Image (cartoon, rainbow, N blue to C red):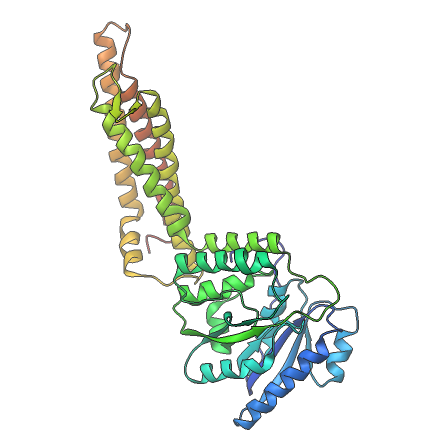
Length: 400
C-alpha cells in the first residue's frame, strides 16, 4: 500500500542461517502464548525430523502483560517492533527472521502451527507463497463470526480474485508462509490488518508462485475481544484492494462514462433542433446533454488518473509491466498527449466558432444551438485535461 503519515522504522535484514522461522506477532497475548509456542515447538520437531533447522520468533508490538518474559522463558527469540499495528509487527518480524522460509500465524491459539509443516513442504517444492485455507479445511463452531464467514471473507476474497486473479479460496487466513526472498520481493509495508490483503495482492500482481493448503480455525483462547475490528478493518481491506487496481477503479468507470456520454452526444446532435430522441417510451432532450457533458469530463479525468496510477504503482514495484502497459506508455508520452490536447481543442473551438458565426449571421438574435455549445465546451475542457495530464505523466516517467 502507498502509505503516508509517520514513516515506519525499517530494521536491518537478518542473515538467513536457519531453514524455517515460525513467527508470531504479539500484543498482550500472555494467556494464549503458551499453547501457541507448544504447537510451534511440535511443528519444529517435525521439521527437524525432515532435517531442517528452525526458530520460534515473537515480534512484540508493545506488550505490557508479561508476554515478553513468558516467551523468552519458553526459549523463543523476541524482537521489539517500534511501530504499532498487526502489519508492522509482521513486516518487522519477517525482516528479522533468520529462516529462509517463514511461517506466521496469530498468537491467539486460533491456528495450529503444526499445520505449517505442510506449508514448508510446499515452499521446498518451489512455491514462494503458501496460504492456509480455512474454507478447504475446517472452521470449528464459534471460531468465526457469521458476518466474517458469510459476508466479509467471501466478499473480500471475491473482490481479490476478480481484480487480481489470485486463484486462492481464502485470501485472509491468518496462517500463511513465504520464503524470505519472496518477502523482500513483495516489499510489504501495510501497518494494519490490510497487510493480509497486501501480501496476496502483490503476490498476484508480481506473479509470485503461490499455492494453499487446508488448515483448521479454532475459537481463540482469549477472554477479551480480538484486535480485529470487522467493519473498520474490512473497509481498510477494500480500500487497499481498490488502490492497486487501476483497471477497476479508473479505467472501467472511465470507459462506461465516456461511452454513455458519447452515445447521448451522437443521438442528440443527429436529432433535429426542437425535437427529442426517443427510445421506446423514453425520450431524451437537450437537458440530457448537461448530464452527458458531466459524464464525459468525469470519465476523461478518471482515464488521466488511471494512467498516472498505473505508472506510479509500477514505478514503486507494485506491478509488473505488461505488453499493454508498454503500449499505453508509448501513447501517453507528453508529445502524444499534447497533440491530442491540440486536436480536442481545435474541435471544441471550431464548434464554438461555428456557434458564434451562426449567431452573428442571425444579427445576434435568438439562437437554438445549445447542443453544440455544450459539446464544444466539453471538448475544450477535455483539451485542458489532456494538456495537464500529459505533463503529469511525463513527470511520472512515461517519457522514459
